[in-house]
Image 1 (cartoon, rainbow, N blue to C red):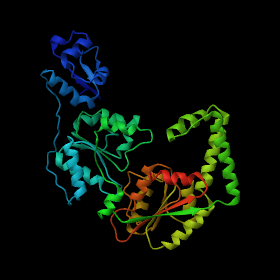
Image 2: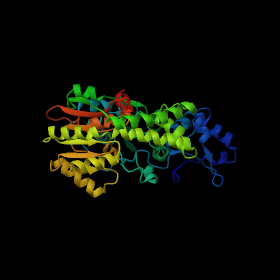
Image 3: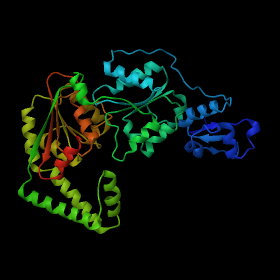
Length: 419
């Protein structure tokens, strides 16, 4: 290993060979063409370079070509002490671990929020007994010291800034965890290469049926626009839709919207007008005044319950917080203040908490029984994550309220996130 590269030093008698001939001599026909094309050669020291993620493929090709080799770093750096689980795993967690081990300890486990994905990771650490890195994003150059990689919220991994973590590690032992690995840009198919195939999946309905998650009920509450807002909404949608028709633009995904409208709006005044009209219509629907009356009614109804309120827009979070004197958390909330608010919500000192997208994932949110989606986007991932915040086993039925403005695109968004 040199820096972030895996290096292969050929025998002295092969060093003067041209690179294609050298690769033929070392690997024969056994190295995948895509990997062969990526393999570079150091001009000064003559060794070959490739990404550490290809370590297993390189070893396999050398063995098949019957080329003896020596690995000069520890392949499975084991822990110097034994570990044990402090609590008994649930049957589905044991099944997930078994499926992962059967796949060669490389693959993705899909479990709902609140179902104990982190405990599956702990089981993998105990089972393998290997050094495991939890801060790969902070210490990418330390990846050669660890024999097991665990990717929580692994749906983010295909992004250019994160995939380097997977590509810079030599170990084939990889566990990906997610409630919803699917991505609208279809990049989730790359998880198979970066981690391994999906090895296990359970839905909220399956675990609710087994009593591992709380029984829950979803209630959609229709919200009507005022006459004035209805006219404003229709006009903004007309501006947006007529622009798409004139330019023959079809929007099928968030990526389409970004590439075909947002990027275009930077240099095209008409596109900018259309984008602003889309934004105005969306804000009218998601921030309908009647939603605040409904929030007030629900807060009175559940005065004694722990309640989480979610909004797509941080200004709406701030407005709800001020209007109803509720603690709030957004991306702007300082770390210490965020910790204090969550601790007080956990102990019951605060019974209500309003937040934006910042608590969708990656944060240990205290248990509660009631959630109110004031506004949300159309992605299934966000819906599953917010639902998961109320699904941890508890007494009584969990309730998820969705406030949906009728006669607007918010109705279609609410349907799409459940598909």
